[in-house]
Image (cartoon, rainbow, N blue to C red; front, side, top):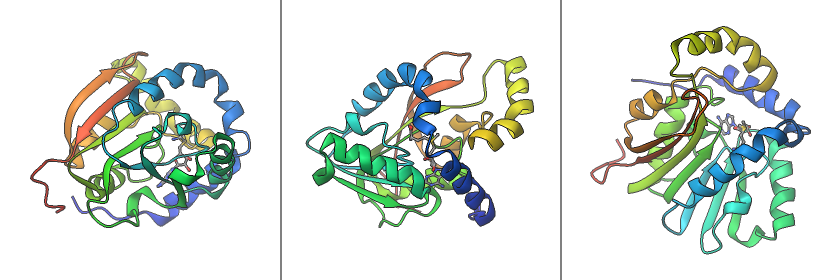
Length: 219
Ligand SMILES: C[S@@+](CC[C@H](N)C(=O)[O-])C[C@H]1O[C@@H](n2cnc3c(N)ncnc32)[C@H](O)[C@@H]1O
């Protein structure tokens, strides 16, 4: 599948998150009570000393960063990074973290740069998710892990149809698509899925552990 970045759609996503960045944490505060233990468990599966976090947002995973690792964290939206930077300072972890502006669809790192790459609630909003997932595959070493915590289209057919119907409104207001087929997208990106954990809500929330094949030649 030949995919290219849709610059216009990506710019619209950036503008939406820029607009939300000042009140994103407040908006998400209730949901975060549920998400936090999932974040802790996802980060518990990180391997290696060199980690990439894609779509770091306001840095809600930063409390999970293991002390022994170096984390490179990127996001598309400058406003979100302002908050991530403040959180990093508050947690006193600036010596182990590199924060950058960047696009998941065109990661500015050489092939096989990281031991593990991770993203939480990001592939609902990346304009071309398969491209972003392929980029994560490219920059992770063969045999390395890709860890995802994502919401997606419900596996309940009736609820799935309601999500399709509501999606245009939600994406405009919140920047996130609620009907992505993220498990399929992970497969389309050529990743090997090792484990999918259902986290509830009719198949909407899932934790996905995928791997870059040991034989991967970065093609
Ligand atoms: C719903 S927020 C999640 C933020 C954070 N990961 C969390 O768990 O709270 C989605 C984030 O993905 C970022 N994003 C969207 N498209 C992106 C892209 N193409 N490249 C990098 N980041 C992107 C947005 O700027 C936003 O910060």
